Image 1 (cartoon, rainbow, N blue to C red):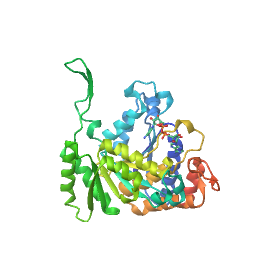
Image 2: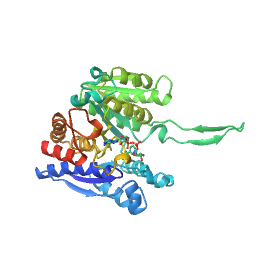
Image 3: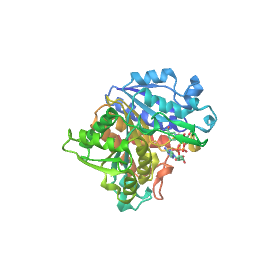
Image 4: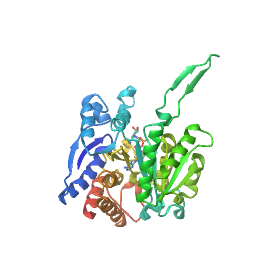
Length: 354
Ligand code: NAD
């Protein structure tokens, strides 16, 4: 297992160090794990004048999987756009052909009170949002700001999806559903958008190869509503880039604890980039108080999706559960009566539970 480790900025190095402890513990158990570190984001700019240095992209391309912390920081906010940390993220996703973004939204029984929804609505929640990541209105051409014949200015973007783009992400969706509750809800806006009508047509075609999976369709406005009304009705949600961007953030907040949410971005061969859903949290960087569990759970996803080691994925997830059951909490998920610990101590506790 050759893993490129890109700590990035802010709390990135702190949380990635805890995930690395977990990987090292697994190595102690006989797994052949090779870790190689490189810079990305502001750290890439500081080290090599580029948020995605060539060496980082090359290392990532040559690795089986990439573990990333987070990028971004106040000191980079005034840089010209191509040098901003976030560009490093966009470019590595593109450079690795990562078109399928998986974001689970899961509520741990121990953290059910962290949600802004009533406990009975979210207790036991376990949904997976699959967002297409490299197409749609975010990348469609033409786009820009133009001047019309009457002299008025107009901003415009182009929503588009090609058949192959829809097919490949739909296959990923059905395959994930097969490994879970065998229910897939495709979210679109087919009542208004031609792109969505086409999306729906192709998803239905692909579904014929997965007769065991129950396929449903939902308009995005209704999906946004259902996610806060009755989120447990969903198993896997499959959707395009812009709808997925919004719905996955909405779904992550159902859990109330952004420090707990991992993510995976996969290419066509299950090579993946794994990172927490949250950002670099510059407000708490360097204080040893960040929650490393989202990053540790990203390693579990890596074991599941890139290395097909469901056993190890579950071992890591069980270790995280155990630590929560022991009452150990970082500040972001702390409740009275629990024991507050720091980032490094949380990493140690997971390793001990493992
Ligand atoms: P953020 O996710 O970094 O932080 C939002 C809030 O959540 C902050 O109060 C932060 O302290 C808290 N938080 C986040 N992760 C936490 C953790 N693991 N443990 C405890 N608390 C945590 O979002 P933001 O403040 O909007 O952005 C900060 C920087 O991160 C910006 O530069 C932004 O561009 C960048 N960002 C990067 C990514 C990424 O690397 N994938 C994603 C989002 C934002």
